[in-house]
Length: 134
Picture 1 (tube, rainbow, N blue to C red):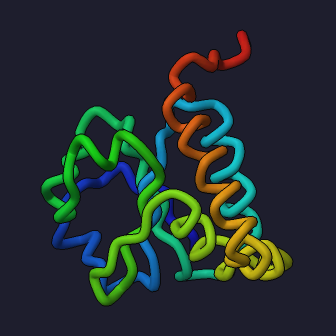
Picture 2 (picture 1 turned 180 degrees about the vertical axis):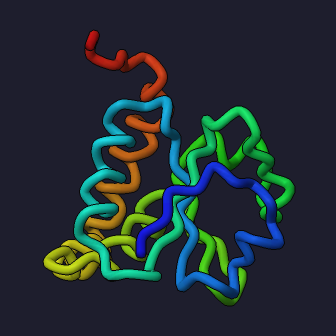
């Protein structure tokens, strides 16, 4: 099953237990909607979705730099390798049925650079986005 984790105990959330741990900003409405798509579409035991906006989140407990993890999307692979930004999305897209083609296209040199630049602009400004009033 896809797990949304607010439990920041690194022993329970060992990276070896998951093919990938996704560290996303739950305070960002666009980020939360995007993560919702992956939550619905990914096969069981593929992604552990960890909200870095949760009050108890501790980046250091996962071996992540606290400033960097709040700057852009991070994915930690089972082997401990960290991917950020568009490369993190490529890991997620490969794991999500029907989105593998996006990972392939996003890997093309010109496309990769353009997407990386666009993502850096988005990530730097995502906190200006407001959640719709309920």
